[in-house]
Length: 393
Image 1 (tube, rainbow, N blue to C red):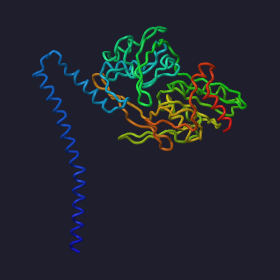
Image 2 (tube, rainbow, N blue to C red; image 1 turned 135 degrees about the vertical axis):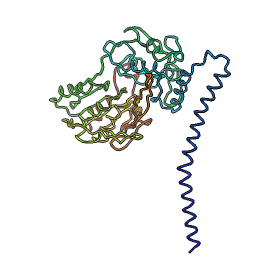
Image 3 (cartoon, one colour; image 1 turned 60 degrees about the vertical axis):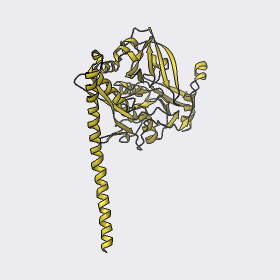
Image 4 (cartoon, rainbow, N blue to C red; image 1 turned 180 degrees about the vertical axis):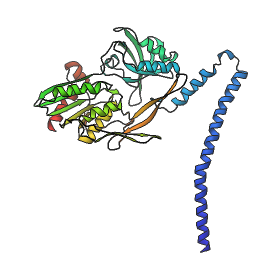
């Protein structure tokens, strides 16, 4: 009996030691490592200020800011970055929507030696010239972007309507291969947001709905289109979300609410420290018709929320290729000197609890786009297939 008691006490002692080590020592090691890391900065700075030959080159604040950029970039999250005051100013300018803004209509940020295209607006000059999200601009009008600040890059791209900007692009393809492309993009003004629809009579009356941008007025424009066709004998709906990459979660929930019954979960968000949030469909007069949703590899962010909600809540069929897979949302933390940290604060989950970040939505029916047929005959083979599918639903 004593032997058994001794073994039990020994086991308890081992467990206590194990949990104590797991809880206490790693924290101590981390704190010690962090202290050593900060000391390393001080040691390097002290050495340079004491022994570096060209003292006039030492700009301590600039060196610290560059170190901060590299530190955040090491996360390898293309949507998380440290923006110094000048870069942040250019980024904020880039987000402004002005009726007379003559531009290529792409949201950009500075990354190391290149300017990263984060967003491309549908029907914009960037869209028409096949610039893609995550393309890297390495040269603007023969000027390497490595040497340009974000403000300088914006100024070189933003010029009068109908003028041309020459861009050299590095593109990392889905198979990880790299290609270099030369693009001559004609600047223009565009009207945003854009919602369009039409009745397609093809055995049944099919309502074809296309939304180009999710922005503050998008939902109001959608309501106008809904009223326009509400009294028509609509028998099926095709919602085209191809080539759409933009944000505004509340507007995405509003749009989905016109097709998903009231109080059905549209999307949930999970944070690192904050409470989980859930977004439910609003009280709208829902279109209870068979629905096919068209997506492609450039369908991302808020558009993926709409597609997943319709797929999981009302059994809408999703057609075309895998979507982009952006299931995260970023926020900005501003500093006193106008610098900021743009970082991923939460991730989105579908009604069934699926997160598609870096994965994308798998379509119910896979159809590759026939670009040659579209160029030669103006036939959208995916839309034609969507008509066939929705008629059978």
